[in-house]
Image (cartoon, rainbow, N blue to C red; front, top):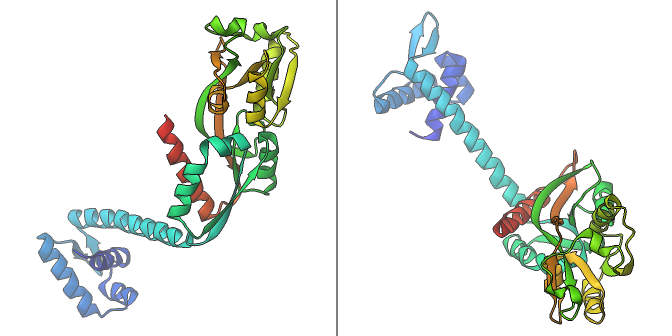
Length: 295
């Protein structure tokens, strides 16, 4: 049975009249009747019966009508998705990334996306997570990947990856033999961490505040390589997500988890109640699929 023939059955079921159905389909009544007989012969059953001036579906005919409706739904969905893919032949997407996220995580998925959709122009904006959240809300950029928490209820979040914040310690430091650190350990211990453009600083401040501790930050900044080198040349503790400590270490470093655990998460943000281009939706799907491999 062909899709065209299912359309004939659907038209008869809707109009309940052969002449009106034929007019709807722009074919002759004789051609429609002939097609119906062919379909019924193929199925080995009658699909419609006449009651006064109406053609009504038999039990089998009703099943065929219901299944046909679903087939048409899938067909139109397929058509829309193919059309959307064609629209991806060109377009622009701007994604915001903290520099550390851009360096550590994004070259591979963005190159993969570019190969899949070579005529979509990708642009990145690199700055801290707080600034990026504001830019997404303002519509300056289409989306961003930032560290949680996100404090704006105007944004949708798609969690991507989670790990632990850790203490990076010079092997010669007395703490290097320990198995973990606590927030209270930093009451009188200087440390190095992100500056306030990173959302993790807010999490860190909340933890210190809960313990009524006023820590001493020896250095703060946004350049992870610089922060890592500062820690390696001093006795200062480096407080950053564990993958970042390990990625940027040029010298041996001991990483100790916090107890209780201090979780670090990356999330993709994009505007709520706002139009997303087909290209933007495709990039979001691609990033989700890529980061799902980290689970």
